[in-house]
Image (cartoon, rainbow, N blue to C red; front, side, top):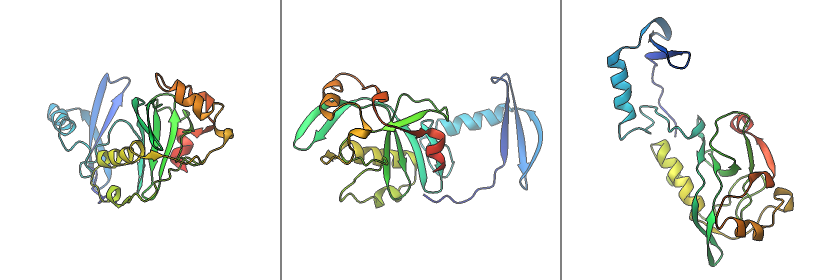
Length: 213
């Protein structure tokens, strides 16, 4: 996941809610004077945004559900939806809450969150499921994480992590009643049709704190 450094060449400055946009060329790491955004610049930005390489490291365009990335760490939001939960030898319909995933090159972490807000004060909660430890880290068993580290795009990293998590067989609990006001039996029943209220879960920290630890 290490990126080769590329010199910046242009910066955009947006005034108000987008009423006026300036572009500033950068030369020798010095930002030059501002000029009205050129149509050609806008065309180039649109071309990159519509490219199939949208998430490549090379053009440094980041998916809009990513909260944070630096060095080997990436943190992103995964929208809650109904999936199959493999619980031991049983398969359950399970409406997952919105989840914030964190991957640091060595471990996967998962936390519940109310929605996709990027407010730095947004709180993350315990993801009260088997295979998840009290600090949010995931027991991945014998899964080899090298495939994640060998990928060349943010999108691939996120997909690999989510596939590992959602396609796991959930077996052993590593959290106690401190982390949830609901029993797992109650969670299973409620999650057949809808997300649970995350405020029943243990409150961890804010997104800002998650991104700085």
